[in-house]
Every structure is written in structure tokens, then in C-alpha cells.
Image (cartoon, rainbow over all chains, first blue to last red; front, top):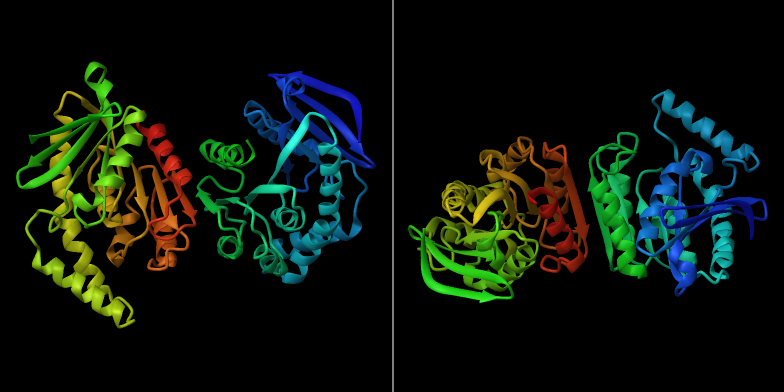
Length: 246
Length: 246
């Protein structure tokens, strides 16, 4: 992991950009962390819109966590932002748009083509990044995963034992095979669902929540549309991580 | 409202028993409240098992609220505890038990007979009690309603404009007519659902949540069975009231 010269210190939080091989990312640490014991870490997931687009929302989540003494980090998804285009993924997105514009149901084939290769490629990258984060003196763990493409969160919760708690956003398409994988998840889960998210399959989200094998799992459904998660719901998600990571 | 001589001061909370006509009840106020400005109030709903049986859980909720500077109060339900038996309600309970023991579906007729007369009689009693509570110098409002028979909470939320927020427990039978009534609810709602509550109709709870007309409504689904609401979920419900009443 190579830190770029870009870094900002603001509101008690240190923001550093880095590259891990070809993958750009951002690490946020509470300013006090360098002087104290190593801190817990939350991996900040995000939709495949590019870190540049997602930066304001990611930075807001990072500031919230830093105030709780928790570091946060994120990496660019394959095919997104400044990373090389991924033609198969672009095609899957085009197929999805076409189906939606035609008012057709989104087929399993489209969902699988859109999500499964992304999960297969992104998850090992997040794990490699986690290796790098945990090698830094400032990061101690425990580690949580939060938000973004829910299937990436599910796979990480299953395969990565260093992740002890996950906050998931049930707002994206989920391949059928992931419902089976959800049964293998056993870590504490905090699942956000926007009840009036018109573009989202609410029943699928409820079925997915039901499938999770975790003994501690909470579903928080709120109003406000896809992007309108209320502040109190964000606060509750932050409290979930504070409860499990601090 | 006549306060009985029974009163206890414990952990900074004053507990006073009272009768309102034939109806017994309990009022809890933060000890500091008498010396400061009038405080908000939460009406503590409960299942029809009698205040004696419910006392430990009600007192725990009262202590939680008192720590936030919020008073709480409850009254006995008609036909419960030390109040006169209500033969029609006893019969409905007997019919329910018989249907459940026979493994039969619980008919709309049984649900209506069990819930609708209770709602019709209890709601005006809670309103009369609210008049009495708000006449006390220590109680200022705003007022919330929390828990208990969900249909009583729905009716109160519709007919009682002084109730500005409600925390509901989606764990009991709901007559069909109440789904229509739910559409008329517009105050902020915090709905608890025990996802693995085997004796509860989960789909009915989700349909009811969907029906509520409130712009701010949150569903918190957790594990732990009917009576096993996790402490963090109780804390979140308390935060909901603090947000809306303080």
C-alpha cells in the first residue's frame, strides 16, 4: 500500500489517499489515534459509481466513525471510477437499463451478470486491502463492513473471519445464489431497508433478511426513498458498530 | 384522580399508585421533575395480563424514561387485573385458546371479539387518564404512547391529537378493520417486530407497517422470540421518544 502525497487533516480526522497495486483507496483515521492504542476499522462499501462521485457520502460516514474513535477505509470497485473499464460489466449495466426502460422484469441472467463477477473480483481485493490496513500500527481491529453492494457484504461476511459485524443496505439487486450464501452468515447484522424505495424489490429484501443465519440480526426499515436514509437511521447504524467494535 | 398512600422513591424516580374512578394506575415521575419545568409523558401500554403481572417490565421502562427526564404512566385495562371480569372478553380468550389448541386458524370473528371491544372501551379510558395526567403541574407534555395491544395504540394515534409519537409492538392479533384505521395514522411511529415470534403473524405485521400513513415510520425487526426484545432495541425505542418528546 502506497500513500499518495494527498492528505488532509480536518475536524480531528486524518484522510489519506493510497493505491494498493492498481486500486485507489482512502483511509480515514481519528487524529488522536496515532497517539493512543490501535483503533477499530470499518470497511466502507459503496455502489459502483466511482469513489469521486461517492466521496461526500463516504467522508460523512468517515467523520461519524472517527468521532467514535473508529477508523474507516474504502477502495475503488473493479470497473469503477479511475480503474480500467470492464466491458462485461458495462454490458450487464446496458442490459439492465434496457430491461428497465422497456418496463420488462429484470431477469436472473442480467442480475447474475451484473453482480456475481463483481463480487468474485471485489471480495479478494477487499481482503487484500484489509491485510494492508491491519499491518498499519494505527489500525488494531476489530473490523466491520458497512454498506455498498449488499452481495459483496454477504460474501465478505461468509469468507472473511476478521469481519465481526456488518451493516448492510438492502437496496440493490441480489442474485438468487446469494440467498443461499446468506444462510451461512453468522456475524451480527444491521440491515437497512428503505421501505418506499420504488426501484428496489422489497419482498426480496425481506426474504434476504429472513435467510441470514445470524443469531443477532436487525432490520431497520424507514421512509425517504432509495437515497433518503434518515439521519436517525444513520445514527442507529453507527451505534451498531460502536456496540460491536468498541 | 386519587393518589393512594402507596408511593416509592427509588433511583431518582417517584412511583405513585392512583385510581381514576374504578381504574387503578401508576404514575412515575423523575424525582427532579417537581423542581424543574413540567416534563413530557409516555403512556405505557401493556398486554391484558394485569398490572401486577406486568409491573416489573413497566417499572423498567419507567426507569429508562425517567433517566431521560420523561414521566410515564399506565392504567389497568378493562377486564384485567383487579378490575371486574368481562365475561365477553373471557369468552373470546377461551375461543382463541380452543382454536389454537385445535391447531385451527384463528378466525376474524375471534380476533374481532377479542380486540375490538377492548379497544372501544380502553381508548376513552386512556384519554380520560391523559386529561388527569396533564392537569398535574409536573406533567407538561408532549405525550407519546408506547407498546401494549397494538390496536389500542393505533386507535389512540388516530383519535387523540395530544399524542405526538407512538412506539408500537407488532406482536398481537390485529382485526382487519384496524388496517384501514392504520392508514389514518400520521404521527411518527417506531414499530418493533420480533422476527422469530412464532405465535405472531409476521406478514400481517409487515402489512400493517405498510398501511400506516405516517411520513416518518420505522420498523425495527429483531431476533429473540416474542418476549425477547434485545436491550439495544429497547434503547432505540427510548431514543425515538427522546427525539420526539424532548
